Length: 396
Ligand SMILES: [Zn+2]
Ligand SMILES: [Zn+2]
View (cartoon, rainbow, N blue to C red):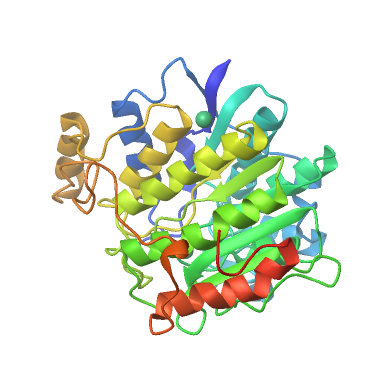
C-alpha cells in the first residue's frame, strides 16, 4: 500500500489567472519540484493525475446554473458572466477554466476515496483547498470547491462525522456555507479577522444552522499574530473540539498565507509554525480516525520563499518522512529557482524561528490573560462553541 496518494500533474500550472494575479501557478510547480528533489514522489507515493469528472460530481455542491456559466467562460473568456463572480478582478476567466478546476476537485475526491477505502495511508492535494468557491459563484481565486466536493462524496459513502480544519489566513467561508446546517460536518477555521481581511466573515458567534449549532467554529485573530500566539490559539480550540466530535475522516486546508512574508494577509507566522500545525493535525488523524487524513493546499502568495517549503513539509509529513527545519534546501532546486526567477531562494527548510522545529507557546491551562488580544479572541470562540460540545471553558 502506498503511504500517500498525492495529486499532481504538470498541467495543473494551467490554473492560471494571468500575469499580475497573486495566485501565480509557479507556486505549484516549485512545490512539486521541491517534493521531487526530496524524493517524496517515489515508489511509496501514489501520484495521480485526475481526469475531468462528470458534472454530477460538481453539482453535489454547486448549482447547475453556475457550472454552465463556468463552461461558457471556459470557451469564451472575454464574455464571462460577472453575476457568477467570473471575469472579475479576483476571478478572471481563461480558456479551459472549467476543465482544470473540475480536475482539481476530482483530485481531492480521489484522495478522499483512497483514504476512506484504506487504499492509502494519507492523501495530499496541494493544488486544492479552494475554500472560497460558493455554491453559485466563483470567489477569492476559487472556481470549484474541491474540499466541499470531497466532503460531500464522503457523506454519500455513509461517513457520519467529518471534520474540516482550515488554517488559511482567510476564513474558509465556502466550505462552511456548504455544510452550515449539517451536523455530520464540523468546520473549524482559524484566520485573520473579517473586520480586516477578505472575505469579511467568520466570527465566533457564527455557529452553524439550527440543526447543527456548534458545528461551525470560527477563531478570528487580530492582524499581526505571530508564531506563539497562532500556535496557542490553534491548540486552545482545535484538538479539544476534534476529540469531542470524534471524526471518522479529517480534511485539512493548509493555506500558507498566514506567513509573515505573505503579501495579502497580515498574520506573522513562520514555516516552522505551519509545519507544527501540520504535524498536530497528522497526529490527530491517527489518534481519532485511523489516519484517514485528506490534506489540501489553499492560499499562499509568497510563491518562492514560502509556499514550496510549507507544502513540501506537509507532503513529507503525510509520507511519514518529516523533513527537519534545519535541512538545507537541495542545490538543484536552488539553482533552478535562481536561474529561472533571478530570486535568492531560501537556504534551509525552516525560517530560523524554532529550536529544531520546536516553538514555545503557552498552553491554555497556564492561564487566560484578558489584556491579551489573542487570548480574548480564543476566549470568545471557546465561550461560543465549547458548551455545544460539552467542553470546559478553562481547561483542555
Ligand atoms: Zn500518518
Ligand atoms: Zn487565504
